[in-house]
Image (cartoon, rainbow, N blue to C red; front, side):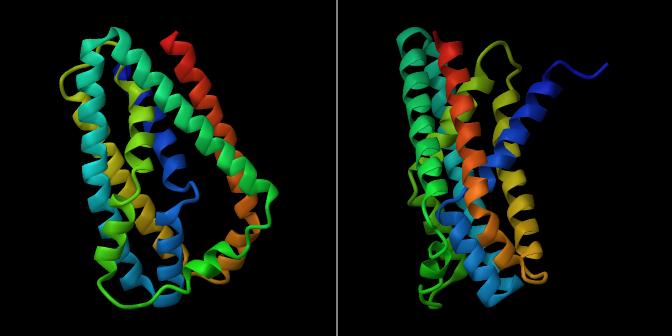
Length: 210
């Protein structure tokens, strides 16, 4: 029989996988760099983004763990704030779905080629405070209840290693064929799906808090 934590971990990994491919600054930067400057540049950006994820994940999981240990008001406040942000983020994606958004990637491509690709990826991730809030919102659900001491470490490692694998895979995929045209064509439908998923998660979070 599988360990009791395995199902929770599998669900957490699945949610994080969806989050990795939600539209945002990291996605635009990595897509533009990989398509325009090739595999090596894409991997350097990936390593920069993943380095940022290491810090964001530690802040989110460490902070959530500390607050949840206090329970009561802190737990409710954190749950409501995180759910509110997820609702807002989902709403932005729904708005994106109804807008003609085809120029977004092209605008990103106007950026210069100067400087380190690694540093660009790192700063793009670190300077986006929504990343740690998103992680905090997700981990709030999965840190509740009784878990072994290594559970938060497993969540942190999952975020970092999954990010490295999926972003690296994305770089490889972008080297094949006319992928950019396909991605731009389906982008609005991805917005719709991600927005609905975030709203569902926010509702689940509020249900558990209250």
